[in-house]
Length: 501
Image (cartoon, rainbow, N blue to C red; front, side, top):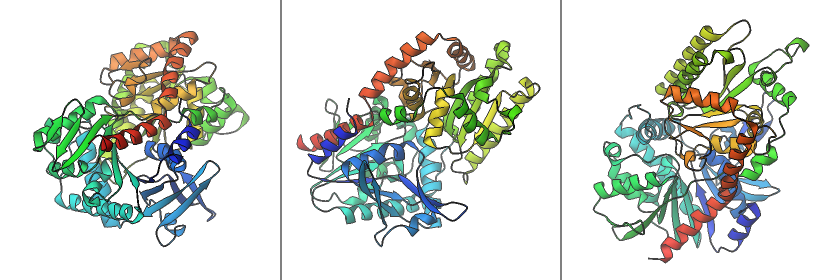
C-alpha cells in the first residue's frame, strides 16, 4: 500500500517541477466575527485530495481565490506559502472579476458543461458570451502556469472548469501535461449538442495524457473524438493522433486518504455525536434534551452538496416509500441530511432547495408524531472530522446520486466504518463512479424507490458480522488504491505516454 512517505520519496526521485492547476483552492482564508483571519481546508474532493499531493511534491498549486481575505495574505505574485509539519507548497491564487466569475463559473462551467456531462435531466444552457468569459479565465490560468514553468515541469490540470487551459499553454518545452477530468464524460449523442465541442476537444488533446475515473467515461471521450475530429486512434494503446500530437487516454479511479480518515475516526461515541448534532440542529442543551438523535434513533445519514445530480428528491421519495412499507420503523428511524449550500446564484439550484424543503415537510407531516420527525435537513458545511464522526454513528449511509464521476463520501464512510466496532452499512447508487470499487455495498438504482427502500431496511437489519465482512473487503480495496497510489499512477502513466512516442 502506498502511503504519504512513499509519495514523497517518489517525487524526490523525479527531476521536474510539479505545477497543479484547479478551480478549487486547497485552503481558503476568512475572518471570524472577531476579525481574526484564519485559513481552513476547503470542502470538496479535489481540495481534499490535492493538499497532500501538493505537500509531497512541493508543488506550486494554482487556483481561483474564493474570498476577499484570500487577497490579504498573498505576495505580489499572488502566492501564499502553505507550511505544515508534513510538507510545504506554494498556493498561487488567481483573482477574477465579478463579471468573469458570472460567465466562467456560474455560466459556462455550471450551466453548460455541468448539466451536459451529468445524466440529470436538467437542460444545459448555451450563451456565446459565457464561453468567451470561460476562455478568458482559462487563459489567465494558462498564463499563471507558464509564469511558474521554469525548466522541466509536470503540469497537472484538473477538471472541466479548466478544459481550455491546454489550448493556451502552447506546449512549453520540457513539460508533460496531464489532465484529469473529475466528472462524467457524456456519450457522443449528448456531447454533440455543445456548440463549442470541437474547440474543447482540440484543447484537451494538447495534453499528453487525459484520465477519467471510469472506463466507460474514457470510451465516451474516444467516441466523441472519433465522431467530431479527423483523428487517428490506436484502440489498443488508447492513443489519439491529431495535428502532429499524441494523447494517451486512460481510466484511473481516484482514491482517498484512508489513513487520514481512520485517524480522524473514533469509536462510536454518543456524547460526541450528541454535541455535533445539538450544535447543527440547535437542540436545547438542557438536561432533559441532552439525549442525542444518535442515542434515541437509528440514523440514516446523507452527506451531499446541494445539487440536482445528487438525487436528493428521488432519495426523499425512496425514504417516503421506506416509511410507508416499514411502519415498525416510524418513530425509531430518522434521516439526517447534511447538505452543503452550493451555487446559490443559479436558478436550478435555488429550485432544488425549495423542492427538497417542501418534500421533507410533507414526509414529516405524514409520518411525524409528537416530537418525532423522520426527516432532518441541515444546510451547513461541517468540518471534515465532524462529518467523519457522523459516519461513525450512522446505521446507514445513503449515497444515491443520479450521476457522479466518483463520490468520495461513499469511500470515506467505508474507511471510517472500518474502525468502528458496530459499523453502519452503505446503500450506494450504481451510477456513482465509486460503485465499481465498493461492490460489497448495497448497490441500487436510485430511480427504483422500492429497491432503495428495501436496501435501507436490509442495511438496518443486517447482522454485525455481515457488515464487518463487507466493510473489511471494501476497505482493503480502498487501502490498496488510495489517493497516493492514484497520484503515482497518474504521473507515471503521463510520463510513460511521452516516452513511448
